[in-house]
Image: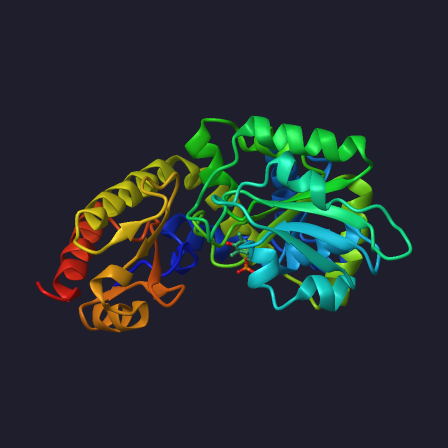
Length: 343
Ligand SMILES: *Cc1c(COP(=O)(O)O)cnc(C)c1O
């Protein structure tokens, strides 16, 4: 099976498995797991933040960040296709008691001119804005990347108004690779950042939340409340530490494979790729003009050994990662061409 459903499907490498087997561990709820402590220090260093926290999932990292940056009854500004709004079971409402004020964009990139009009002061009829959330890369917009100057401008202007910014950097390493900046530079303007070890980086489990020391200390308590206080989590952290060193240099290859997939798809009649040239490892394409529903194409492809998920009635999303090679991507294109009608 060629699995292009997500970069979450990556399996731990031999080096990760070795590190897991040999990990020095302790009870992390007591703060005594040396491998978790090392991973948290390393994540803080890479993001340029004072402290970091290992959480079981990206969803928990975002949930904790929003809780720390808001008060009950406020609003959180978020792009309308954002993961926070659409794929986290309304945790912003459920846990933080906040409403998401969503903003449409063509490309997932929230610029200040789109944010500024929806910032609300507290008043007799309106809840005030608690924080702003940005997603880099933007998953459902097709792995799009914030230009670093947009990140800097949004955060500077938000800070001037006393508003904090959370960066959903689930794929921040892909963003850094695509724009030639360091992860640290991309995280610097934001107050808190979450990134996933378990996606393109390839670790089996885990995400990191990084930010100011006091926020992370508070976040540690929310992690416990949410059931994320883990014990000998060094077994997982060990894989994360390897992933941070081993995988970033491989991401350029994933991005090149995504571009090749996009080109091949664009040459098929009735298929439209949006954006036409993927910036990172996510390819979103529309097959509406072929007359085939996305779910039907996905089912046909499964029968041909290729897994690609539909994300809308006529759209699908293919995600490249280190467990699919260039040859796999070429074969996936052949199978897609064969599965489309009239061929
Ligand atoms: C996957 C993802 C998350 C959440 O990560 P989980 O570990 O699946 O909870 C958050 N934001 C974005 C943009 C993602 O792609």
